[in-house]
Amino acid sequence: MRGRVWEIDFLRGIAVIAMVLYHFSYDLAYFAHLFDVRFFWSGLGLNTGRVIGGTFIFLAGLSLTLSYRKWVASQLPRQKLFRKYLGRGVRIFAYGLLITLATWVLVPEGMIVFGVLHLIGASIVLAYPFLRFRLPNVALGVGCIAAGLYLSTLRTDQPWLVWLGLRPDFSTLDYWPVFPWFGVILLGVFVGNVLYGGEKRATVGPAPEVPGVRPLTFLGRHSLPVYLAHQPVLIMALVLLGVAKIP
Image 1: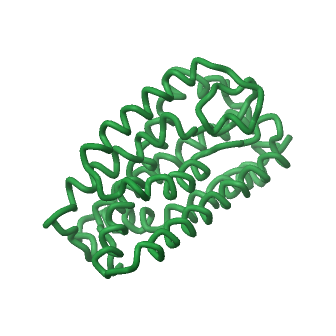
Image 2 (image 1 turned 30 degrees about the vertical axis):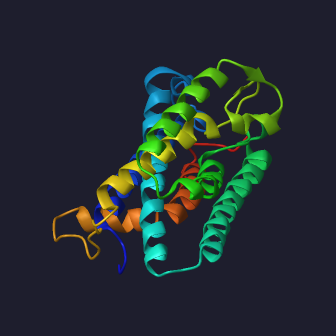
């Protein structure tokens, strides 16, 4: 596809496959009760999900630098440029709110208050002032991660505070607070500017003719619709097969 950097889509496509397999495993535990769902609440199960989600978040930060340089090169006025990022961030955050609503209806005991789409939507707007920087983003990113580690030692029973990184006293199926995860966005911005900034230019064009590469880049290009659709499809498939029942 014109204007796409195939290697980023390729990496995102790998993350999509990993995400679908991870969530399918979770659904088998949560809805079909084939094994203990608590496996995903700590240790290997929890950390696997964090690595997969963290990959999406890091690539989101990296990708922001590409769009930023493209629009700056087109000499788009900064006011209009900010509006583009604001609109994009609000749109993705709104998708996150739809997931909040869906989980409130279907699984109220694990309602998603601030999940990965909430985080990415908010981060697109928050990252805008930092998209042209390199090393400052390393310092800010590490600072955000450190702040998140501290805030996670504090607890709250107020849903409107969880975006900060305070540990909620209630159960939520997906939790990606601004601290520490905005720090990962900023580290992605740093890497994007190192790899593709200055006089460097990202190579755009089709993926190479290597088995498996193009399907993965296709998934990477369409990661958002796949993210929105895959869980309903997986859960419905388990219901139709008689393996799972919706509470």
